[in-house]
Length: 65
Image (tube, rainbow, N blue to C red):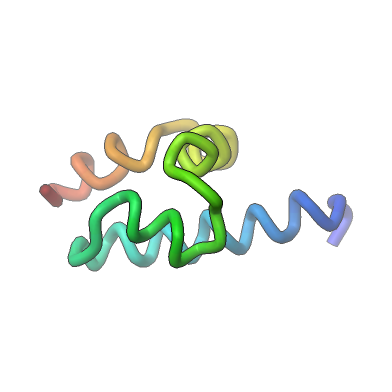
């Protein structure tokens, strides 16, 4: 994979979160918890690190709530 274990797990979590945000049925907190993050602040930080946008910005760009 050419990345650390933590980077690999976070990549999977962010990928899963992206899919859930596209569906648009859960709140950001529910998506964070469902993807294994302990709180929304940590989720926002990690999502932005890997996606370069916050989860809210990502959802708004897709036309979600």
